[in-house]
Length: 427
Image (cartoon, rainbow, N blue to C red; front, top):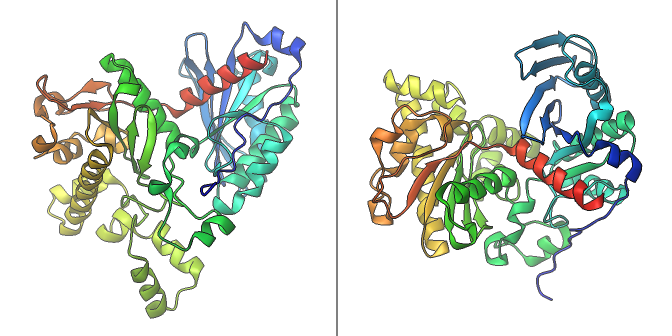
């Protein structure tokens, strides 16, 4: 077979049945999103999908700080030493279950833990139960996401240390949703040997968000997602666009890493590789130094020279800053370009979705992107869109052939739902 995919979609594990029966009525799921120096969390009651508490442990390995907030408005902030993710996880357990900011009497009330994993490569096309084999695989592909996958593994092991292996843990991959892309979309025009030897290909990211908002859009318009051609725009400090045909990702803007595609807060987006080599030669940069330029000094920050934040750029542009205006124009143009390309790739378009911090809150960006798109079937309603922030809302006219929606993303809820579905299967 020419295209070989190395998947482990249904790696199984075992859980103590007795302990699980005791948890069935609670169905509280802890969602963990570990970064290289942070650990975000939400505790969700799956009976009504409400958030009981959420927070973040910051500056792991370089001091430490925890911010914790409960659904009833209690807030706790403390400087704490977090040498590793283990100490951070132990602290969040302490805050969740003891003292005046506690939301559970005991951690035994938590039925399972769901983890966000950035890179699953071609091994995982769906969420799976954590086993030793799964954990080993995530660790073995760390060179594809060196800042994230090792941190994810640390968080899972820290969780196992606190809970023990009897509490089921589930991993949900950012890349899994995009594993339905055909080879014509995910392969690069490089020698095929590099794909076979080093797994060099497009993986795509933000898959959890794209999956959530495309499915939610189907619910909102009352149609089966299998009958829809949707373009989802996840726009924030990190941005990506996805073509979703029949509920499956068929192409997406991010590539081998989250650097590719759209220009972002500090990331360059797509750049001619020869331009990168040319700059390296002229400046005498090492690969690490060039990577820092592309990932941390480019995008909005690099063009505007003032900020990576879209809000700052809009304010500066309104005050007449030409570089801030240019950054905004480039971002909007690139979004339009991807929308046109993906509509062509799918052979049509039924709906366009805006999500993410910028997509949900910047009504001026949504209007600019949809301006002069009537040829594609988009009839934008400026009055509906004006001033709208973070709401589920259709912002196209009733007569519009292509429906345009704002759909706030909720990756944590999707992770919790996947976790619940998997632990129900193993009970």
